[in-house]
Length: 233
Image (cartoon, rainbow, N blue to C red; front, side, top):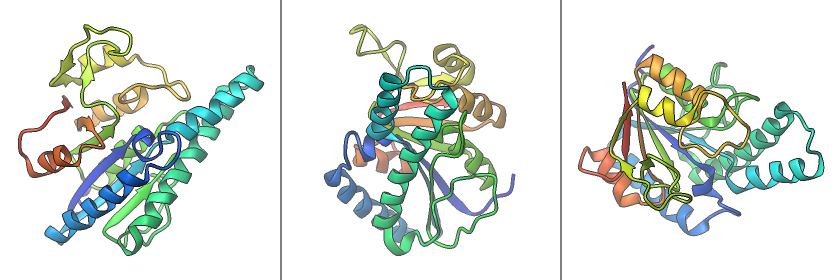
């Protein structure tokens, strides 16, 4: 693993960027936030990986309804394309900060000439979480900021269990018990099982937090107290 300087990896859930359609209000705030954060320290660079969000779930849902025997690989490709649409949207909004094409294969040769590198889905069997892990390893980042529509990881599904408790810290072994070991297209887990196995092996730390809370994100980046869940070796 080679260090490429002051690189931070952001793993954005698509539900933050486009829950059912692009969240214009959030995107305006986020682009302004990123411009300011990068201007404050010219050594900073960012890698952003974006999930498929509402489009992935809706389009995959249509396939499941109309062709229930469709294999997982085909469903995965539908989700991959949704991630690429969301990533291209954010790349375009970042303008000159992100001059390179969206990365769709984290293992390939690609340029990183700007301040921000955008990445999206790769291929069936691998989520954007996995892409974030590969890119963190490749560019020498020791943690991934996993930003989604939940503020913390819970010990159970809070939508189904009102007594579910938020967790401040987890080891990878503890998280693996919660998330399982098998990847399913469209799975709605905080960090997918395949990515979990690789992140654990690489000794990476994942910080899970609410992506829409930019004040909290700023606290994470500044090393101050924040609301979220730390998953680490």
